[in-house]
Image (cartoon, rainbow over all chains, first blue to last red; front, side):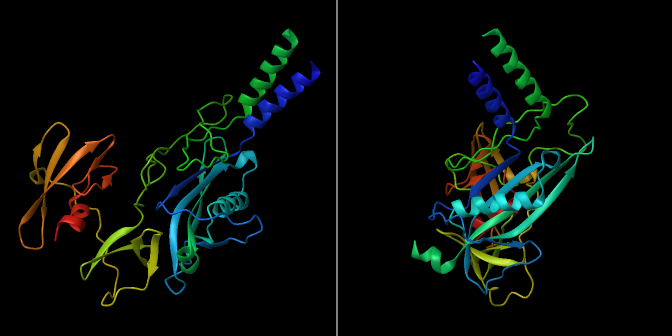
Length: 126
Length: 178
């Protein structure tokens, strides 16, 4: 009985504890092998365009958001975006931007957006 | 059993008190993360949206089964080739996605085809229940009739391309203005 109560309570808290929401949109039908969890995904802000000097393909767009009152910070959003990038096989994130939307009551919604890229040689190798 | 139920209800209530709403999200290809469908639930006087429209938060909508062409990539016609301009970088669309390319020769400043022109009433010559014909000015000085069919919340063009909203003349000119 006690185990059941503990499990039910834990399950409820876990369901509530999903502090961030994420979204990913593919730009093409091409898929890439996931990167390992230690792969360092570089994040280039929107103010730092990568340019065409390094050939790359933009494969999709990612968005992660969460409320500051839930302990979400720009760093946690960026880290989660990096995780998604690894799962999608991306090499880096470009056009990264974090916005904050203030809410009545003092809370703020933080939203990270960015685009996933793969460098051209690795894209062609697939 | 009654005690279990009571404790569950207490946990559920506590959970709802701290639940923060976020919009519903859908994953494009089945990868699941922390996304969930949220609703405006919060203990008064807790979370309130105000001041700005929350939907749509994104320029690129979600379409099951479609590969979305991002609206942040503005089509640019240079010497008969369609490039896409985003954040000052030129791209061409390939099977791998948007490929970054050098600024096309002869382009000194980005000439973006701005989606500012609104479809004038005179451009729409016929309006069947689910089909619209739009006269698009072409580079021969005439007009090209473009048939758009309504599909769900958007429209499908003659070449099968999908528009999330009724396309502007400038958008149609990219494909049908030659």
